[in-house]
Length: 142
Image 1: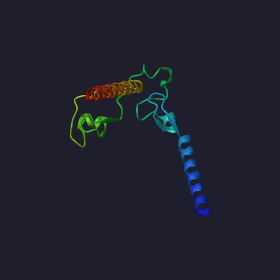
Image 2: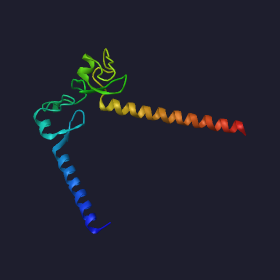
Image 3: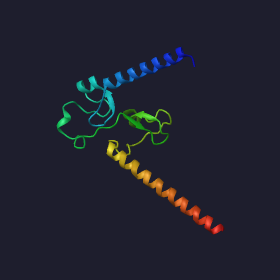
């Protein structure tokens, strides 16, 4: 590759890294849900995703009233829908209209992590069970 092309690629990479740093500088994590939101908006109005407000620092996130998430996945087809519209009109793809959400307020981050760990453990147990059954079958064939 010519020297000029290498220099151009390096300058493009540097520019992309600078833009990424700038974007990270402008965003902050919400203290309640942990998602990245614009720092300026978080200080003024709070988090638009979970409803956290700037005066809520005194109470812990678990003690605060939990609000519905803005987006909810349709249990029928898996499409992301606006929660309010999903409950009022149904899914815009498949038309499924839930009576209520699985958890009316959505799981907390800790509940999601616990569920992921439990699913990973269950998957490990199933894999070990299949391997054991395979070894037993192999021993029976000998």
